[in-house]
Amino acid sequence: MNASGDELAPDVRAILEAARERPGGETRVSVDARSFPEAVAETEAAGRVPVIAEVKPTSPTTEGVREDDPVELAREMVAGGATALSVLTEPEHFGGSVESLRRIREAVDVPVLRKDFIMHEAQLDVVESDLVLLIARFVDSAERRSADDSSERGPGERDDLSDLVEAARDRGFQPLVEVHTREELTAALAAGADIIGINNRDLGRLEVDLGTFEELAPEAPEDVLLVAESGVKTVEDARRMRGAGADALLVGTAIMDGDVRQNTETLTQ
Ligand SMILES: O=P(O)(O)OC[C@@H](O)[C@@H](O)c1c[nH]c2ccccc12
Image (cartoon, rainbow, N blue to C red; front, side, top):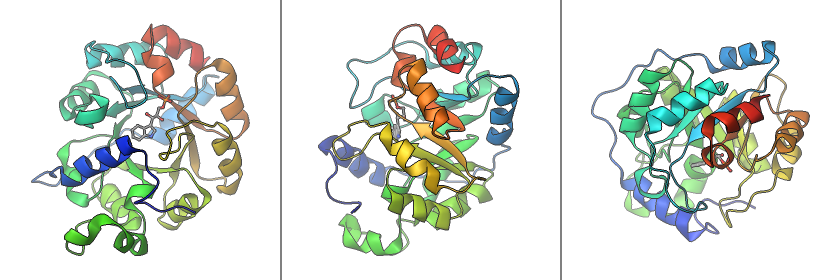
């Protein structure tokens, strides 16, 4: 079973509490997005592995903080062959910032994913990006919403997944919907998602199991673009995810740890 409010790691709970309170933008953004499916197709045509390289200065499961200029890191990732970039904008637990995303998107020409914990529509209006992450577990269905801690908020203050997918598309974003269970995958498909990330890390104990992607990928229709997220560390892991049907891989830690360009080159070959 899968419920949004319980069984979350304490770190994740804290992240969500902070995210819920984070203000949205004042004016609606309108994005002229760089196509992620096209970028993936181009990488495939060049005989390389499509990788979304993640600029993640730190995380609840990482030791230390990487202090390098995020724009430099982003450039190195692109030079190493990254098809797209993922940029954390969550400030408190991942060392991310909206400003980093803005600068990175200006500095590179690949599609950029905004990685954050978006709970309501106005939070989409904080910054432009090509893709935007929506985590099914945290924005899921209306029924689930009433079961947890949204009691102090009025109706409509936390949107459901279909609303957010639509709101994202209305602004020109390509929504990447993240799932971890069969129920969430079903919800993502029902919400019309066509780019789906299967997160190998569970948000309960924060443990990684590449078997998650292998188990869920066959349940997704052919025309959905599938991204294997988290826990890909080696070329072998990358092959394993590709063999299980991953159209692209989202890699953070294994790229951020050491020579970013070299690490990206290794994983995209
Ligand atoms: O560092 P890893 O194991 O390569 O994982 C990257 C990415 O999947 C992970 O950072 C992530 C997946 N879903 C998220 C949601 C929010 C913040 C971060 C994430």
